[in-house]
Image (cartoon, rainbow, N blue to C red):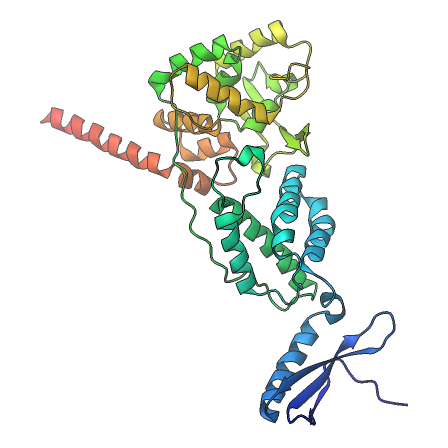
Length: 384
């Protein structure tokens, strides 16, 4: 009986055209059981021997039968649906699916999974930065390239997908390693000035949104968390709000979803003014919907409707344009300026660590230190 050649076993011979050839087995077909042969070529025996050694080592690391037939688009769909989807939030899945469908598959999806290189990916990322925006009505007038943040998110997604491919023996190494992106510029933090709050609240009252913004500026909640508040989350005696869910948009549908992180599940204290405001609001309007800030039909409010309304109120109040998230920054800076420490603030905001809170608001701490130094100096000077 003929000897069954072991995986990776190879031999070298000189061909009739003068070149040297190294042949090796790269596994067995799972259906027929037949050996799969591969070869390498070179001008000299020594060159082929070196190539053959490297090829055999690679064949022993990856499942050649599967990886030779699989393109990047095949793996991305497999990875997302089978490995990631069961453990991710619906909004995250929607983001990943969109990036794969709109950018990854058209850009590099046709490439063989085990052949894609770091250079292929670097060129792909560069194209996204300069000309990656999908042409549609809402993108008219915007730059053609995607933001560094968006491309960085796609890079992170590909890194995870290819890392899993390496673990599944479909790739030798992760080609995302070594790809470079420009540094993300920190978006300038905008906050509402204390002296502007009166005008803002006046316009918010005129728009019927006063309670919504007052609660936001009193707690610093994320947009989805604020929309997800229900009357059952209010404890009037303990003066607290329980943050247990958020409202999100998934594939055009408005629904409840889990919070961003484990730390985001929290209970925040509220002042007497907020307690009275919520009690009055509940008596006036809180019987028809479980949500504190519902949509007109009583269901959850569309998160995408918040920013346009916010911008209209700012404009009517004669205030500069900013993001709704800047209300959260305004709350944070007011809290710090009035003696709230970073550990307490981090818990109030639902950050995953105090270090993150310090990274975001550390510059405020420097201002507070200078202010404290000036106050101490003032006391000492008066003593003199």
